[in-house]
Image (cartoon, rainbow, N blue to C red; front, top):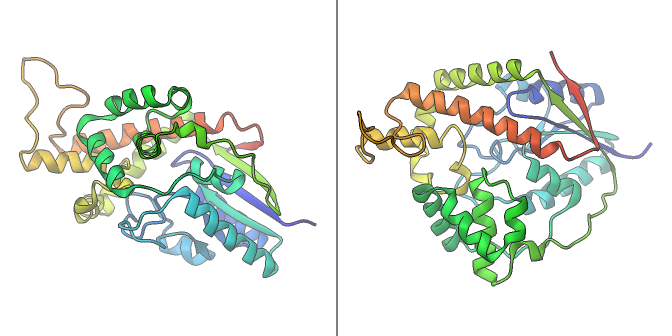
Length: 307
């Protein structure tokens, strides 16, 4: 038999962790995480890293292995994960289990990435700060002028993708799309993708409950400890952004909601913890929906519905 990598994917909150551990135990495999946020050791509660008992059940890789202040990219993950996979196969494993919800990281591992230029951290920080203050629309308008092709395909709800595309355009004077020309890279092992889904009402209820559990477990305190890093790409994440907005209101950095006047743009100030929790639940549900849409184009995924 050839070597095989089984990738367990699906929307946030669907149950990938338990499913991947059961499969790993069956095959005698570790679990290789493919999550762009669980990799950071300072972000344990808000990213729903596996519990201590789950981590003890099987060996996990790429869980809390890097610091939030260190720039980590899908391109770096491709290199490091491939190195690990090849080493584990050489050690005698026939089947390896990977679990993740980060579509871009999974695509990097499966298909490879083009040779994009290295990041310009000063420019990225500037654009990320603009994203925080102005929202995604002004950045998207600039990108539309510089690279209309990318604007037709990019996930506009993912502000960091817009930031990266605009960064490359401004840094190189070339459209971001002009770098995406390389053919799919070949891997030395077979890849099988298993997608997990649940009925929408069940998935959304699981998400709502998990957010409440995160707050009970100390998410607010974790977010406060990370507030000095809030402009980094890693912290442009559901669960933290909403709490940072609440912290801002507590400090008087945003105006109170208008009473009887014009409506406040967007979600308005986050004036209470309850409102922050409500927004985290809503935005996590939206994120789950976008994940399913992202993977809907991949006909190689074998979908499994959980109860």
